[in-house]
Length: 278
Image 1 (cartoon, rainbow, N blue to C red):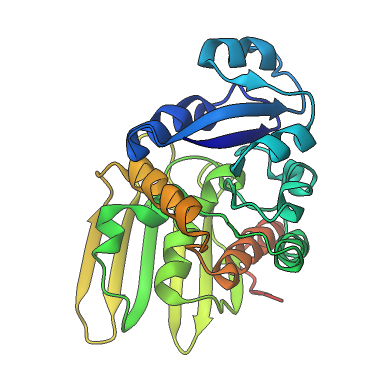
Image 2 (cartoon, rainbow, N blue to C red; image 1 turned 60 degrees about the vertical axis):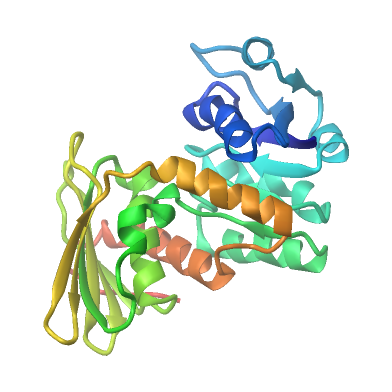
């Protein structure tokens, strides 16, 4: 049995709660989350010690111990990407396959630096929104995409990646500029990819299903509403990555996604004005 180590800001959170059982299910028990580390205890939640006792996972005192004892590594902290660089520093120097949860990094500079660490130390690594693996999005033709309209729930800082990741997957890793077009309650961002190609994201509040409308150069269009179990499909891909040691997502796409998110925050300060991307 291969052992997986979790490294988190605090362990009492949705992804850490769900991933262990999903991983065992996807591997028929061949992979098991055995070790965990949390930087802090969750305020008004379970302590890291209590969480590990509940999950049947061994809590270790340091990231170094988790890295040493584990075959594969998962850096979590899905709602606090500002801690990913600190939490992933040792894993990315380990040479062991490492998955870093969404959102990968708080800004483009940090994202590039983390990929450089992994490359320098021969560490297979990737990051992704689970929405990349939604069955409905996988059915979309990638050739000839001209325009994408995306809708979803959640706030920009933690949920924008779920709309931007499929867009970059379909339109490529070379966005040119962004413009903020939303309100304080319903953030929205227009993304220009050059050559007349654009995409937009819209956060329409709780209850809004993740949906893509895609128009093609030939005049055809498709609308896809996500209803499939994209989280389990994502876990299956993570497992394949651990087995093969080959990253599933191109680092250029991940850096482009983080760039859009970073510059989108800046664009929100200057609505209806184009902001050129690095």
